[in-house]
Image: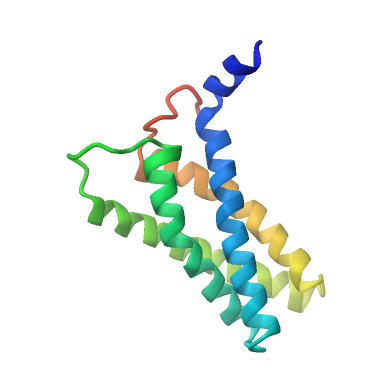
Length: 142
């Protein structure tokens, strides 16, 4: 299969990955700055970093990844679902970070990477099926 055909087939997953990298960068930089410069507890740093990525993630995923520009969708309700999903993801990340770094004594940054990778998959599935309802991603069954 040609490269263009592969891109068309997996376009939303590729775009989601790019947005995820951008959001992860924003999250990780915020997390690191709060931890290293302000010496804030790592769990609070996680809340701060994760929060900074939510608005960026919503806009990029809505307008680019899932190409959801329809006027009949109530953006406030959609954003509320997005925030709720991300609050669930944040809770999972806090539990995972705590278990991996405090109980299993894995380096805090390695723990954060592990948790982040898991949540990328979780979030794609939820965004695709429940928030943006597969817009722009009909070619890939998740």
